Image 1 (cartoon, helix red, strand yellow):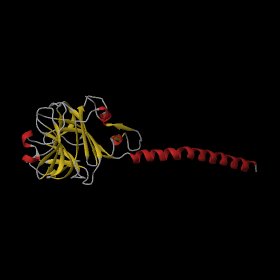
Image 2 (spheres, rainbow, N blue to C red):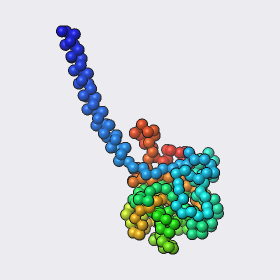
Image 3 (cartoon, rainbow, N blue to C red):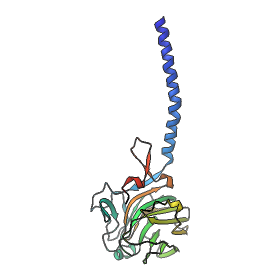
Image 4 (cartoon, helix red, strand yellow):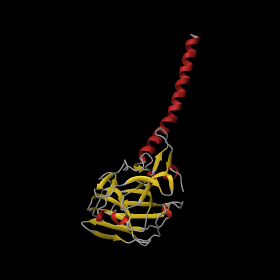
Amino acid sequence: MLFRHLSLFRCRQVSQKTKFALKIALPLLCLGITMQTSAVLLFHDDFEKDKIGEEPSKWEVGHDGNTVAQVVADPKKASNKVLLTADKASNASRHDVGGSIYVVGDAGWDDYVAEWDMMFPDDFYMGVVFRFQEGEKFYLSDRRQGGREYHFYKRQGGWAKIRDGMVENDPEVWYRAQLILSGDEFTFKLKERKDDTPFDKIDPTTEGQDGNFKTGKFGNYGLVYTDNIFIGDAVEDLVLPVEPQDKLSITWGAIKDTY
C-alpha cells in the first residue's frame, strides 16, 4: 500500500510539473507562431546559389528582347556574386531599343516594400520596373544622365512621366535603394550602401501617384548591377530566418559582407 501511495504521489508531482511546463510553453509557442506568420517575405535573392555566367534561377523573362541577364562576379569584390541585367551596352539594353526585361514575383502583387543593392555601370538611363504586367504596361523608376535626376514613368503604348526626382548618384558606386508601393502612391529612396542611416531617416528621391496599374511584377530595366534583393509586405518583413528551425532573424546587412 505504501508503495502504491508513493507511486500516486509521484504521478501527481509529474502531472503538476507537466501542467506547469505546458502553461509556460504553450503561450511561448503561440507567440512564436504568430511572430513567424505575421512576417511575410515575398522574395529574396543574393545570387550566391547561381553559377557565374548563367541566367538568374529565380527570375523570368517578362519582355523577351535581345539581351540576356547573367550572374557575374561583383566588380568591387570578385568573391561576391551579383546580377548584371543585360549582356550589351547601356544604349542597347533598354527595352524600347530591343532589350529584355527580367522580372520576379506574382501578377497579383499590389502593395509592398522592396530594397536592393544597385550599381550603375555608366552614366545612362537605367533602373527598375514595378507593377509590370507586360512589355507595354508597367511603371519605371529610372535614373537619368547627369547623375542627379531620378524619375517615375508609366509605359502604356509610349512613355509618360509621372514625377521628377533628384538625388546625387554616380556610376560604379554601390547604392541601396528602397521602393514603397501603397495604393496609387509610390516612393523611391536611394543612399550609398555604406551609409548606415535607416531609410525612414532618408528623404525621398521621387514621390509619385498614378492609378492605371494596380498589380504586377518587379524587375530590372536597362543595364545595371543588382544584389541583395528583398521584397516584403512591410519593412519589418525584409528579414531571413537564420535556420528553418530557428525563430531568430537577421537583416540583409548581416547576410553578406558589407563593404
